[in-house]
Length: 397
Image 1 (cartoon, rainbow, N blue to C red):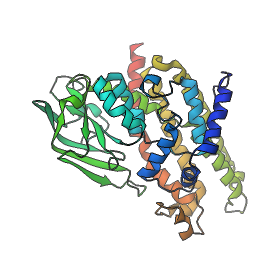
Image 2 (image 1 turned 30 degrees about the vertical axis):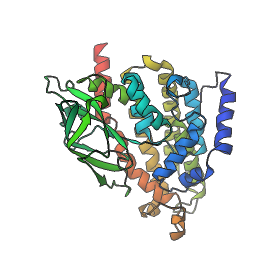
Image 3 (image 1 turned 90 degrees about the vertical axis):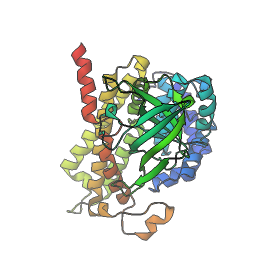
Image 4 (image 1 turned 120 degrees about the horizontal axis):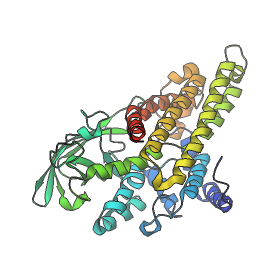
């Protein structure tokens, strides 16, 4: 199901599909399909290939370098990118801080940061979560004390995805103590090469280095690198989180996963020698996941079509459904992998499969994905936080 009730989208879909088939680096698609972990340079090539058509920042307006697409065109593009198997972009710059900069930043900040985001010469990290704050983002403790034309930052940020790649980090810091904990927070941008910033790797359960702890020890950040007004960072942060939570849907990718699951279940034998798909229990699980994905797709279209009128409760409900669906899909892959899912592999090069010829190629990445997907219902606002948002919206009615 899609937006095909817009007649002009058929030609657009064909254009996007042709791009991924003929003009996009096929070796990147092959690396993703082979379960290879991508490097920063791989991601630079991915993003620059998209930007060669002006298709990197698909939600950005034309005036800031985006294509100015409506929700329908964005949805079709994402469907075709996922269907082709292209890697997802690193979201922190393009999807998260970029819209904050062009919406709330001043002209100098737009000129300084937006071009380097679009050409992928500078990567960004997100400094939101803290070691002792859990899912309560507003309880953050990192301080930013004013000293002339600078802020002096002290504290730590954690779970900073790809912070080891980042040239800049946008972070929330407390510039004053107010009665309401959401007040007195400012949105600051720091260069990662600044004296006093140190990055410490965190190896997650999947055995991969995605995450980091970033420590700030008397880090001086110019006041000119504050986005918007002092003390109003919570407003900018919630604006960012609305977009972040919508980014978890990946409907087309989930549909491709379901196709692959059916193919594997039709080929792999069970204990009785028959294909696993013959198991009524497994068949029911596959059907339930497929129904869930299609229902999620309809909900996404409804939310995208609402645009700015979409309520926080709609976005929260979508985030809950999308992340729980991703977890259930990952569970099915592990179920099909069986004992082979226990194999962990270094997947930094195409040759990793040759070292384990008796293992199904999907199995080691399946277990790694399963372990990492456990965090989907926590990061970007835990499921319990999303339920509280929905409850507050309902309580006001």
